[in-house]
Amino acid sequence: MEVQRNFFIFAFLFVSFLLWQTWQGQSFLSHKKNETTNPTFHFIDVKKNAKKIFIKNDVISLIVNMYGGDIEEANLLTYKKTLHSSQPFKLLKTRSDFIYQAQSGLIGEDGPDSSVHNTRPLYFSDKKIYELDNSEKELRVPITWVSKNGVVYTKTFILKSKRYDIQIEYNIHNLSKNAVNMNMFGQIKQTINLPKKNKIYSGNFALQTFRGAAYSSVDNKYEKYKFDYISNNQNLHVTTENGWIAMLQQYFAVAWIPQNSGQNTIYTSHLDNGIAAIGYTSPSINILPNSKAVIKSKLWIGPEIQKEMKLVAPNLDLTVDYGWLWFLSQPLFKLLTILYNIIGNWGFSIILITFIMRAITYPLTKAQHTSMAKMRALQPKIKDIKEKFKNDKKRISEEMINLYKKEKINPLGGFLPIFIQMPIFLSLYYMLIGSVELRHAPFLLWINDLSDQDPYYVLPILMGITMFFIQKTSSTNNISDPFQKKIMNIMPVIFTVFFLWFPSGLVLYYIMSNLVTIIQQKFFLSCLPKTK
Image (cartoon, rainbow, N blue to C red):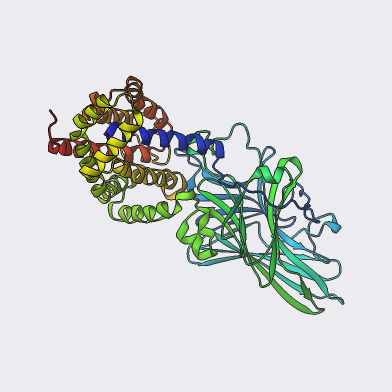
């Protein structure tokens, strides 16, 4: 088949994908969960002017409200708020127009956070500021509350150096005369609608990723759950051993990972003021008089770094969502990481991976041009068949099939490379918008963020020029259909417009791929037999 025809098919598939992706809203979740009632316990909002403590290690800082011991603010110290900002990225926040918090507590029959008390326990601490010293590997922050009946509750935050996972421990010492029964909950709540003036989440359709809840269970390694379902009270109610729950957005995640034996219950709930919550409750424990018990859970607050998340909990690394082409994106990312460790520049690593991909697909490309050469050589015979049987379309089809069989030509042979290149291209797209390692990754000159669009649109224009050059240097004049020829002429412009908003790293890949195509095209065309 002609190069232009393949190019047209690729363009059609690509544009169709973009429209489908926008319509899907990047969630790829098509089924609904069973509707259940909201949890029987509710967690009231604590006073805004309550006492708070500050906790910090070398990668994250936290603000904890002493009413309940919830984490109301989390700053990622090694990640910038925006490209040129001096402020750290604020993942958790508590504002009048937006709430994103990680809550935890003890509920159940005797739990101090149970809704029957209509309040949260007011913890006390020795200090207001806790910082991990450079000489220390671990920071322990205990806060304590004593109930009226004499039960001592110590909630301890354990942070380690250069780690985003935080251990939360409840040490319960029952000094009362009666046994107490309770269980732990971990909950993440977030305002569904973003503030109007929000600079963190891009409004660019080409850079949109999933934002919402997710969970893992024995039956489902990784499942996303849209805010739309929660707001419509189509709530989760899943019982599982182990597992985890999370809130996701581009590049960052907050997740609770229970650390207990027995069955945990995962739930979602639509709270007041347009807030969605996903959480879990652990099995109940019974603590006898003059006895102690410990309940633990881990909390991840940080970037979606696959190799670190995988060590924290099984399947937690799947929150780095590469979509339905994950089986291609994951090895491509590993290869890209290896190249980056050698070269030290993500942009040059993308260029090198382009050459590697084109080298791997070279046999297919060669087969495509060989098929094109054979088809081109048959054009006079095909023309004769059409002229001879111009009033009998069925006979034309039969004669052409017989001709292909006689010459041992597969008329669809030229399509295979285009279907191979499409998944590679899309898997790179998912990788670039989903891997936090490429966030704010510079290349050269004005390209300071390969995961974002080119601010001056230079790369998309260069891409359009290379595409136009490919079209003009391949035998365009052989296209006899005026409509198809007009479409082919306008396609580079359409692609350029689309690529204005695409990650500059992806555009860079496409430019280099086009340059390789131009070189290969020159070589293969020089080897084609001349037609009379």
